[in-house]
Length: 350
Ligand SMILES: NC(=O)c1ccc[n+]([C@@H]2O[C@H](COP(=O)([O-])OP(=O)(O)OC[C@H]3O[C@@H](n4cnc5c(N)ncnc54)[C@H](OP(=O)(O)O)[C@@H]3O)[C@@H](O)[C@H]2O)c1
Image (cartoon, rainbow, N blue to C red; front, side):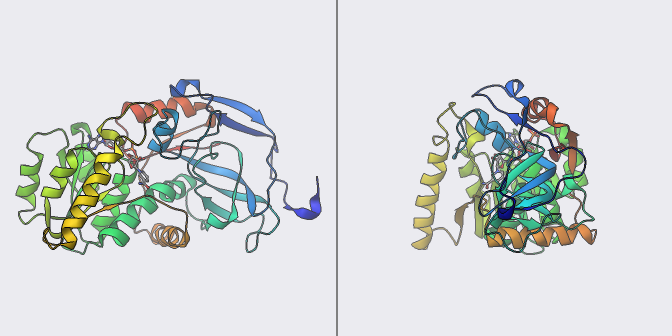
């Protein structure tokens, strides 16, 4: 151990590590907890003792090789985490052992000690519950940036949020409602009461007269449609837009896929974005546009996450946490997500 290269603080309690390993493509039941050495911080990186790690649809996609950036098997899943820095690698400035941070390494978070790049870290205020803090990392920033940076919807306008009961959807709904935006939120009927409690008007996404129902609620069309389904449903979303409105596509894999062919469901979305935005340039869409969104751990990510942490501290945002699981229960937690019926975020607590 070359201690001169590292700024080390021995973590309190145990210094052994365990991590969840995905051995290969397939069912989440194959996930297993393995002992592992506590990682050392490489150059430009830090080691974090994880307080909470998020469970999201991205892990389902990775296990089925449907993710745009699939890691090679075996790998440790886990898109995002919150925890305390225990070791700082060479070349890292402004971060010390003991700092509480959030990170989005995209994989490797389902562990007790994770080694992550230092440049994507965001400070997490001490008063925030770790599960709530981690729910805002990928899902919260996605919701925030689609609403405030891409769609720029104003108070008094109406939007359609697909999957308003999910990890992203609940936060998108909560953020929109607190900004005075009217939200029509699709969900399966069993979750309509929860969607209503968030302040949205629930509709069943399987309903054949969905466009008609949306038109009843927003006769002039909606200012934005947030769509993670893709496929021909995008045409429906486009037709619901008011002049100047935006269709935000943030995934397409729900619309159908073959394992290992992650790109296929995205092709129709990309084709539509190309055609509609070309027509828009020609002035043929009444100002309607389509945007595709993918979350990145850049400077905007850090400032948007920080803005949400301030909203939580002031009591203006309460991220909905569905359930908390131990690391050893990661497979069961993923199965829970895949089976549906969850409202809000599933979180692992190592
Ligand atoms: N582009 C990005 O950067 C980015 C970032 C984060 C997440 N995402 C994507 O966002 C999506 C949601 O992620 P998540 O973690 O929030 O997942 P989640 O918690 O599993 O939520 C998914 C939601 O989708 C709903 N749903 C399922 N089928 C639907 C359909 N046909 N029409 C409308 N809604 C449907 C489900 O509702 P019911 O349970 O009621 O059926 C569920 O509430 C995923 O596709 C994920 O890949 C993208």
